[in-house]
Image (cartoon, rainbow, N blue to C red):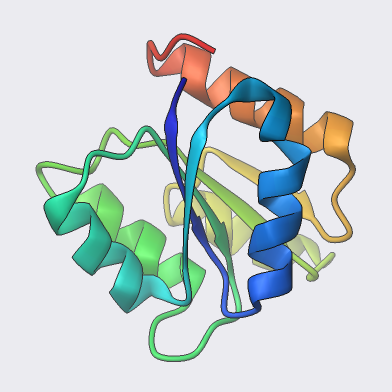
Length: 126
């Protein structure tokens, strides 16, 4: 069982991600933007971050860069979910340090596979 932080300004998207992963008994915590995510990380252990790119206050790419630069968080896998299909956006996410990039609407099988892969590569039992 993993602790997964889902960062998205639209609560329906966070609920959708949680429902797609419900069979794995992960603990899923939703927050609304990158600032809330960093505050949550300061007080809670997290095994995986799933983040949208376009959010107010702090977007997903800025969040990913902050995670990669922080000595306590840099090893946490980050998966990006975005409605952007452009290769440039995907490149920017991966250049920021994202471990994976999935486009919305995301298929359950793709999300589950990406989550399992990221957790297993980080030594978390799924």
